[in-house]
Amino acid sequence: MEISFDVAGTPAEFRRKSTTGKAELLVRDEVVLLQDPSRLSTHFSFKTKQMWHCEVGDHVIEIVRVRPRFVGGARKSSYTVSVDTVQVAAAAGI
Image 1 (cartoon, rainbow, N blue to C red):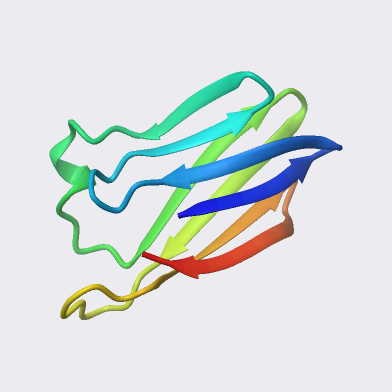
Image 2 (image 1 turned 60 degrees about the vertical axis):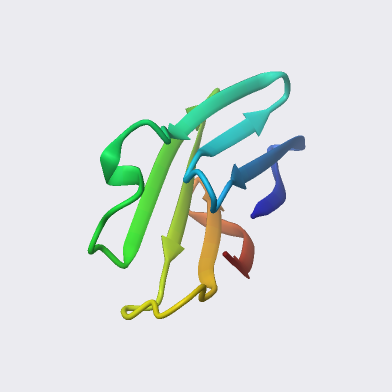
C-alpha cells in the first residue's frame, strides 16, 4: 500500500508492506519507521483499527487503518491520512 500526499506543500508518502507488516512514512529525505516487522504485535492483533502518529516540523500526521472484523483470506483495509486533523488522502488496499 502506498499513499502519496502533501504536508504544507512538501511531498510525502505512506508505505506499508502487507507481507512483512512494515509501515513507514517518507517526508523529504526523512524516513520514519511507524511499524517494525520484528515485533510480534505487527503480525498478530485482534484490533480492527490501527493508528500511527508522527510529527513533521510543526505538523502532525495521523494515519488510520481499519480492517474488516473477520478476515477470511485477504480483504482490503481502508486507510485515511490526516495532516493537522484535516483529511488529505484516503485509499483501500491490502
